[in-house]
Length: 343
Image (cartoon, rainbow, N blue to C red):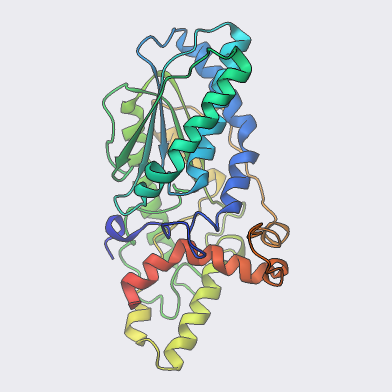
């Protein structure tokens, strides 16, 4: 599996799209707002500059759909408030939206961005008067964040949410993980080690690249799926993939897919513990950690209302949390499944 070519969320605005099945990810962006506020405040204090050349923000792993611009809306709103509170001159904003080439950039720039700019303009006028404007320039940057994406010392703030748990490639050495598609209780120790070592390589590379691209005093706010446990095969991070593995194994028994195909399919993801994240950051000299928190999201309460459609008269599925969760997983995993098993 060539992860860079295959990994992307379901595009468009349809029923199974990521855009319509990503309320969990939006909830996480809202939960981390206090951390983002602290990072923005520290940025304005640390750089001690008027941002005359503009303030550059990058969203790495932006995906497609409302969440892409919701994250930027939160960040820009915070920056506007900080500028007003500190009497700081409003800078021009240069926003870079990054994801792999397969991401649905057309939906972002074709249908979502124009309305977003209108809302930003309305917000500026309500805060600063009818004549106020907000120069804000958006750019798409297709490519892997496990490599350099921007010029040296060109970014002030880097944001990434629900992306860094994805690996640059499926780890090597996963032979013997029969019947599984990810780390599981039954996985041999060498499989767990292979996943961890791939995470170490990828996260180290990510930090090295970002260390070159950020200005001195720049900030990063990174949110990723993780775990509290030291056990990488614990239920808190592996259970959802175990359920998918059960379904695929049943399809093998029914003759719908080949067993060899299942045995060669592995999810390119790793959900680290806080200790593992801290260790990699400490290895990279340019960075220090201002805040490292572990938060939990109640999937059940969220999934029971996640797909509420005000334009639909169907209320039956809205109370079925399992069905809604399956739709969310489909929006994330379907491109990987189609590439490997066929449509």
